[in-house]
Image 1 (cartoon, rainbow, N blue to C red):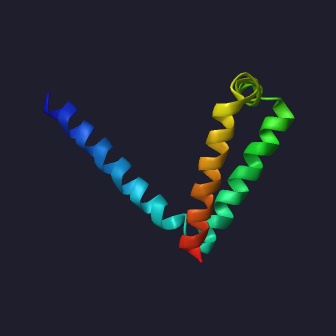
Image 2: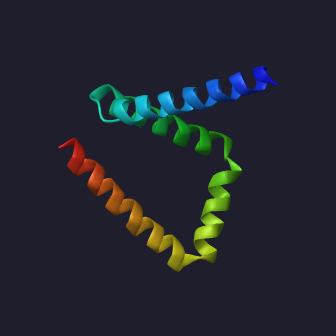
Length: 87
């Protein structure tokens, strides 16, 4: 019983620390470079192996064009806010 509690607390603390570290790291020059490399690698994998997720997203966007447009607007606004923070 105590071991389960200790493992749960350890997991929660690890995720909180990891999340706060990533939040700090993503605003650094190295973090931005790393995220761009990860994004380009994921795009490479999705085109090379024709990953099903990309197909599902395209189908979802085709089925729900208004909702996907709203999501794109929200994502663009968030990106603008992030760019303002880093400037």
